[in-house]
Length: 273
Image 1 (spheres, rainbow, N blue to C red):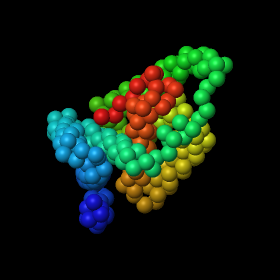
Image 2: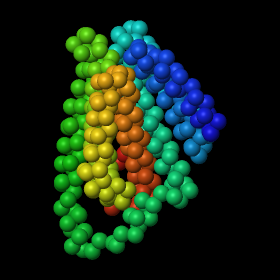
Image 3: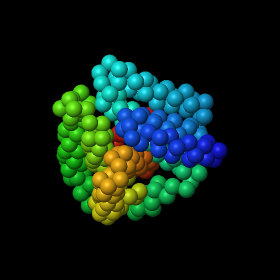
Image 4: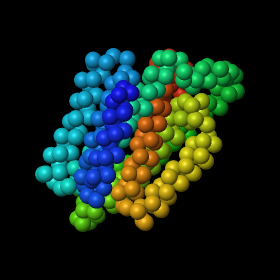
C-alpha cells in the first residue's frame, strides 16, 4: 500500500489543480479519488481479503453508478451530491477497518478500559435501571434530529438551491448537515454504549466542537480570498474525518458487544456492514 499511497500523492494534487476552476469536475475527481483510495485501504486492512474485495468494490461502485445515472436523468447537482456522500460512507468503512485491525493486534485500549472498571454495586445497579428511560429518550431525541437533517438533505438533493444549481452551496450545506448528523451519533455511541472509555466527555463536548469549528472557519477564510474550491475541499476533508471516526466508534462498540463488555449491550444495537 505504500506504493499506492505514493502514486495517489503524486497524481491527486495534479488532477485537482487542473479541475479547480470547474466545481463539478473537481468534486467528481476528488470523490472518485477518495473512494478508490479509501476502498483500497479498507481491503488491505480487512481480515478476509477476497470477501472484503468483492463486497467493498460492489458497495462503492454501485453508488458511483447511481450518481452517474442521476447526473444524466435528474440533474448535475443530484449526481454530485450522491457521489459526494459516498465518500463519507467509504470513510466510515475505512475507520471501521482501522478499528478492527487495531483490535486484532491488541493496540486499542478501549475494551481493556471497560474491563478495568469496578463492578457496579446494588445501589448503582438500581440507578442504572432508572437511567434506562433517559437513554431511550436520548435515542428518540437524536433520532428525531437525524430525521430532520436527513429530510433537509433529501430536499437539497431534489431541489438544490431553488433550482439555481449552485454546486458549491450544495456541497457546503451537505458537509455541514452530514457533520452534525454524524457528530450527534458519535456522542450517543461514545457516551452511552462505550461509557466514555473511547472518548471522554470533555473531548466530545469541548475539544471536538472547537477543532471542527475552527476547521470550518479556516475553510471560509481561505475560500473568500483564494477560491471557493478550497472552501469545498476543506469542508469535505473535515466531514470525512468525522465519518471515519464514527466508523471507528462503531467497530469498537461491535467488538465490546460481541464479548459482552458493555453494561448497555442489550440496548440500541448498532451495525455497520
